[in-house]
Length: 469
Image 1 (cartoon, one colour):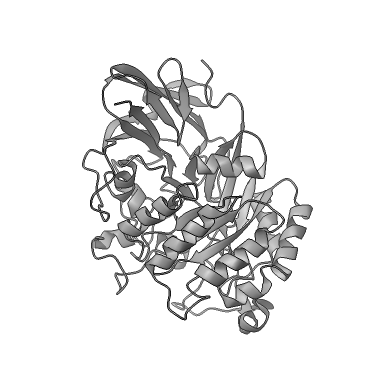
Image 2: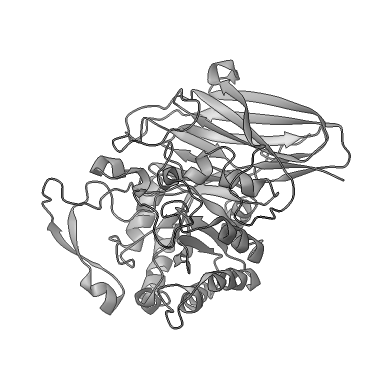
């Protein structure tokens, strides 16, 4: 039996990167692309903030520079994108297939659906749904992932479901782990998750959801929580991670932001800022790929193949170089499907086997260590029907079925192998795996002074096993 990972290529990527064309950005597009390539990424997405100033440059200066960056660094795939100011919600990454009108499409989308571009009349939840429907209607379909979804509590469960329904081929999930990974080095909360509930926040979210757990968003880290609730409906809802890179740790160059409104970009002055003790700083990012990576298994190294793999969820997220690769699939002896896939059984009573292969880290990360995997968790949950309550937050069937120490896995060189059999399958379910270098039973709420390099996790995307009824 052929496995889903016999043919193809792993490409690490980052779909949330800012440049000088964001009001809070700093770098040239080519700088961000160069650093992404130097970090070993195979693809990246330029996602400057939407708004009137960005519309001035998206089809002109910014797009010319993106094309130049593609020419300068052909070894990395560079996508045109946008950080969408979602009406009545948070932000989202829009990733556009490379076409002749990719920049024009972004400009049109911004002008019609970006919360900062169109204010009369004010945009609301229906406009966000309309925006996703617009993306779904395009012949070359983009991708949309909600960014840092729990940070401010603005992305309610019913909005996530509405976006998923409006764009079944477009809206494919959310950031499982946010960027701003060096924030604790600057006295900030990990991931810059430091907000409290506000007027627009969903009242059903607990206070702890406004913080990260093991560097991951609460919606992802909580077993049986919102992500599992969405998966229990059989939704193809996947997670990513990225840098959200605005300004790198230790970069104290002052920036003239007055040029953003007039010219559509900020202007570095060249002067170094001498910060006083306790003064707010904003250099809490690592360069793209240095800490957070979304690793995608594509059929080949091609932009459309990368988008296809992300659209189908064949990818996993990794912090701090915890592992080198993750191959995770299920089979019934005849057919095998990878992460993100659906194994459809023709009859009840079949035996399904999960196969996990993990290539361990071999290189020192920026924290100076070669990470060592302590254990992995196998998480399972039942698939039922679409939730009647559109604001459902929980899946009570989701649970950690097995906790497997790395020392209990079969090991061949630097590769760990783990198998689990599900005999006599009579109902539909999904499974997912995660792992860490720590000994904790579950991800813990991140303290303000946590060293991001000491608490590392990877999360695989789900696999669905569907029993025919």
